[in-house]
Image 1 (cartoon, helix red, strand yellow):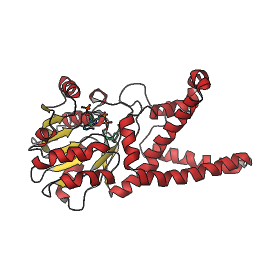
Image 2: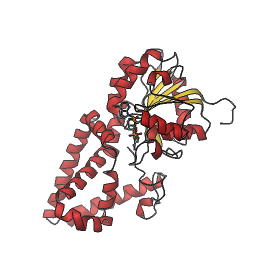
Image 3: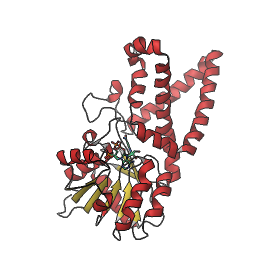
Image 4: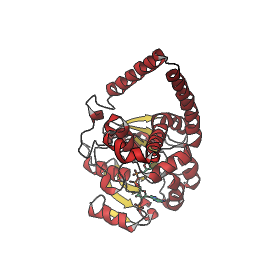
Amino acid sequence: MTDDKPLIGRLALVGIGLIGSSIARAARVNGLAGHIAISTRRQETLDRAAELGLGDSYHLDAAEAAKDADLVIVSVPVGSSGAVAEAIGPVLKAGAIVSDVGSVKASVVRQMQPYLPSHVNFIPAHPVAGTEHSGPDAGFAELFQNRWCILTPVPEADPEAIDRLAAFWRGMGANVETMTPEHHDLVLAVTSHVPHLIAYNIVGTADDLEAVTQSEVMKFSAGGFRDFTRIAASDPTMWRDVFLHNKEAVIEILGRFTEDLIALQRAIRWEQGDILFDLFTRTRAIRRGIIEAGQETAAPDFGRPHGKPAEGDKSA
Ligand code: NAP
């Protein structure tokens, strides 16, 4: 910020895991908030956030953190967002922005909106950036750099508040796009949720073939399996909630995926190499498009250095 006054006066972060703590760090580094109030469910996590110096005040009670806040960001598993809204709803000040970071949007709107007073601006959001690590130690200030943050404001939200939240995310290095919660959920089912399910499934299948898993799978994992294991190491609570709360879109996309997989099975059975070749040519071009869009590098090892920040950069 070039201005002396930060964009946000009091920022309340409810949930201080990978995403919440990355916001705390990025907001601090970029001078985006005057005061950062942190709240989390367990004393242990709160103590760790304090040790890391992530905020200016620490609260076990989410309402205490959210009181007088100009911006509240809820960063908890999506299945818990309704309970958080119920806790903070009564204390929210007029004009405050209430947002979240959940990987599913329509369900978050359904869960949170009933508890939020009409005098706040409810602007759910999803930073499409993450890693397979969890907790306050896992976060880092650069997580959102050149990643997309999708805003799904409710129709009543004040455009000025939407602009302010977009400026907050841009201030942390993100690009911002706005869409409806339903569209978000369909797009993310294709780009993130179903790919995670496939990874969970293939790693589970390999594990079921125990005799192989104990030896050859680990040894020869660089043949592709290794990258699935990274995705399948993602947080079980978070991902359970994602699938339970984006049920319709995931089932819809899985149906399409299954049909396409059967078509590939048939092509292999009947040795229709041209079908396989055409698909693999098309998918290679998609990969090039992702690199050109700056969402990946062309470096070997999927462009992932072995240091902390870029390791396992996946988009949830
Ligand atoms: P995380 O590192 O596991 O942190 C979760 C936070 O939520 C912790 O502060 C935890 O508190 C709190 N929490 C857990 N269960 C709760 C409950 N039942 N009630 C209230 N608080 C609870 O998780 P994260 O990766 O930051 O994910 C947070 C949100 O970001 C999720 O909605 C996820 O969909 C979304 N997201 C994640 C990624 C990713 O790659 N991880 C990317 C984009 C968006 P305690 O530790 O005190 O129990």
